[in-house]
Image (cartoon, rainbow, N blue to C red; front, side, top):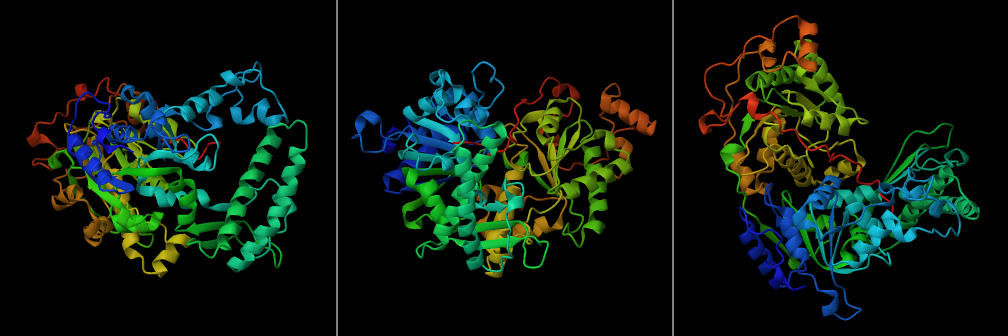
Amino acid sequence: MDPSRIFEEFPAPSYRGAQEQALRDIQAAFDAGNEVVLIRAPTGSGKSLLARAIAGCAEKVDEVAPSDASGAYYTTPQVSQLDDVAADSLLDDLNVIRGKSNYNCILPGERDTPVNRAPCVRESGYDCSVRHRCPYFSDRAIASNREIAAMTLAYFMQTAGSEVFRTRDVVVVDEAHGLAEWAEMYATIELSPQTLPNWDELRVPEVDSLDRAVDYADALLGTLRRRKDELIGKPELSAAEVSRRDRLQERIGELDWFVSDYRDPESATEWLVDQDPGGEEGEGGPLTIKPMNPEKYLQHTVWDRGNRFALLSATILNKDAFCRQVGLPPERTALVDVEHTFPVENRPLYDVTQGKMTYEHRDETLPKVGRVVTRVMQHHPDEKGLVHCHSYGIQERLADLLRDFGVGARVRTHSRDDRDGELDSWKATDEPEVFLSVKMEEALDLKGDLCRWQVLCKAPFLNTGDSRVAHRLEQGQWAWYYRSALRTVIQACGRVVRAPDDWGHTYLADSSLVDLFDRARTDTPPWFAEQVTRLSAPDLPTFDPDAALAGMDEGSAAGRRYQRGSGGSGGGSGREGGSDGSGGESGYSRSRSSRRGRSGSSKSPMADVWDTDG
């Protein structure tokens, strides 16, 4: 790696914000001999441009011996981030490769068939006449031979050990804050009717210990290999048989890893096993085998893939804790902080807490949250808003409450199946609709009038019913627990303010959020601590549901739904005197005309990042 090239490799014609200083600090960190540089860069820092400059410092293929690593990988867990890279003209030399399921076969009669189900996959010894033009293999060949290959983290991990994507000089991981959690999720093994095609043939025992789980996994491996060999022996497979073979191969790889890792005395991985109740005496139900601190897994899938690493995120909150989680040596890892250039007054936090939203208090608190959300809607009658509901249960109950209050015409929800479509529709509408979202704290760019305010319904603490979470808390890892929640809050707060001249308001409805800020104070980045210090109570109007609908266009479909549902005219603005810091003093406009013609991109950032095939 040659860090001295970092400025000439920066792809933009000029610097904005703190980019020039960030490049200087990153160069110094690599020049000091660090193998890994963590770059804590808040929203709007231009992380992708910084990433490109770092990747450009990798050794060139014609500058090193054939046996030495050259070139760079750019990888991110977010599909939307990869889409943004592919669409950015400043990053057009990042050659993107996706999993096979993202490409269609080009053979006659197969044009609607994804490549992972094409004849070359279904038929033994198939010699494809158009392989050189196949969109997947063409992109793979280009990405494998160019200086910078870009891919999702899932694809990157899947190609570990590949002859095509070998070790490179530099690896850049964007949105790297959840690397340990992604690795744990990716290495988790689920044995159930949905994941094992021959589940009905198996007799699953009650698994009451890890040793018992390993013995069962060992025996199961033999059964799965025999089933797979039977399929491979066929001259041609149907699409269903291909799917069955692939699922068998995935489970074989996972179980083989589990057995070998558990029996490796040098491995730091700790394993947990959860099992659903079974049927008859002595029989167990579906099994989930989960890794804790999968350092060995990350070593194989990530750290062995490069000589130097740059990990970028706004929310790497504690360097030493992060290094412990992902198996990095802290003494050879540096942390670079990038200054936040968004004025703090443009990203205010407001305290509208109504009590605790924990399960035992939710029945009492949620109706109060519904009322305060209605009052926030009144305060922003002609601006789109987002409510982070944390769970589908909260979303459903809150939607019912808002309908009962008479403001349902302004509310949009989504399910697990239609989240992308509903999100796109909400972003595209000119109406001031309020989107009740679940798990959209990350990978969502709501710049400008796409969204001007948001409500955090519940402190996003991890589920203590999850065995991994419970195990860590039993070990006293409360700092990790609070950091995880704080990280999600910071990510959520960044959804609605995307540029130095952008602005948006975040309302906190769960009193546990205020407690979280206190408990995680030492791990809070300075720029977010400044927001917390300025936390204030807004001057909201008194509860008046009609006023919350004042900004709806009566001629729109939503407006007509309101007219039919209430028979009212929508009433007045419901605004009271005073300011809640919502932008009046700074000259922000609330006019409806400013929203027209500024709908969002139709691209969905919510695709399943694990839907890949190597």
